[in-house]
Length: 211
Ligand code: TYD
Image (cartoon, rainbow, N blue to C red; front, top):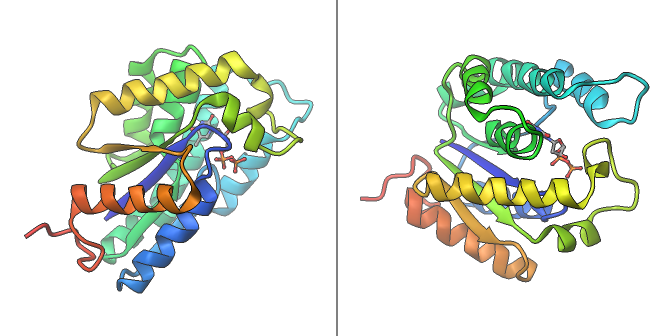
C-alpha cells in the first residue's frame, strides 16, 4: 500500500507522518518511509540543488524535471521494491506536489506535468494521499524564519499552492483526503486515522481490506 502526505510548507506534515507511522507500525505494518525530493543518494543531492539558494539559476521547466528525476530514482530504488515486498510505503510528498507547485502555482501546463510524471513514476500511484490543508498565512507563521528557495516565493505563490491542492483533491476525492491542519496536533492525527479507515480499511489490516 502506498500512502502520501501533501500540503503547503508549514502545514505540520513531519509531525503527522511521525505519528501516523508509529500507529501503523503498532498495527503490524512493515513500513518504508521516504521523502521527496530525497531518500536516495541522487535525490538528496538534487534536493540541495533545488532548495538551497545557490548561484545556479533554475527555470520552472528545469525545476519540474529535476523534481521528476529525483522521483524516478526514488520509485525505482525505494518505492517499487518496497511495494513488491508487501511493505506499506509512506512518502512525504509525491507527484501531486509537482502538479501543484510547478503547475497550478508555477504556471506550467498541468497535462505536461502529468505526462512527464507518468514517465518518472512508471505508473506507480498512491492508494491514498492525505492533504494537510492550512491557510498560507498560518503556514508561514509555523515555518521557520530561514525560508528555502521554494519557501521564499511568498504569499501569492502559496495561495495558488493551497488552491491548487484543494482543486486537485476535489477532482479526485476517492484518492485524496483533505485534512484540516488548523486543528490541534491530536485532532489532525485523529482526522488522518479516520480518513485512512474510511478509505482503506482499518490499520489492523495492512493490505487495506474493508471486508
Ligand atoms: P518539504 O520537504 O516538504 O519541505 P520542508 O521539509 O521544508 O517542509 O518539500 C520541499 C519543497 O519542495 C517544498 O517547498 C515543496 C517543494 N516541491 C516542489 O516544488 N515540487 C515537487 O515536486 C516536490 C516534491 C516538492
